[in-house]
Amino acid sequence: MYRTFKINKTVKHLSYKTISANSETVNKEWVVIDATDKVLGRLCSQIANIIRGKNKTNYTPHVDCGDNVIVINAEKIRLTGKKMTDKVYIRHTGHPGGQRFATPRELMAKDGRRVVEMAVKGMLPKGRLGRRLYTNLYVYTGAEHPHAAQTPKTIEL
Image 1 (cartoon, rainbow, N blue to C red):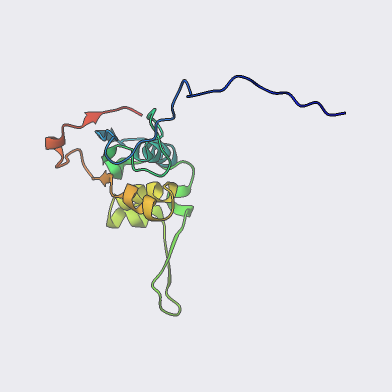
Image 2: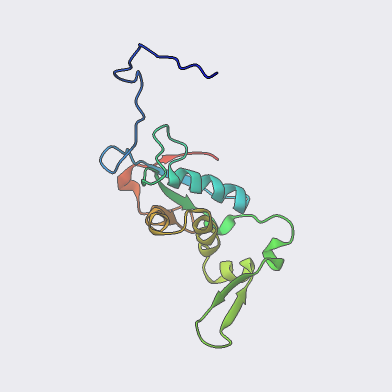
């Protein structure tokens, strides 16, 4: 009852090719983002997308094809609701009873960059690629940064 059909047409080549980026063909740029009065999670998710390269047309999941991101004024970041006092960051020293807790307010009092760095790092992939991508993030308190030689372009998020 089944019919078999024979197709006489043979395809010699495709009319399109999938382009995958690699370390030689990727075009990495430098970007400056001002974090003044921006909400932490919304800003960091956009930063993670830029670092990952998802805003580019030649995005390749297994390649570092994103841009280098410079974040200035990191101490002026904003958290919504009562997260500044109620959110808890947990770390462990590795010793028995070594669990330590900190709120964003305590972390920002020690180092204003840590909250932004931790948020972006958590949004990057885990593993070798994520650790490599994390090196493309530069966070600074204040409006000055030492990367003027790279001629970064300022973008508004």
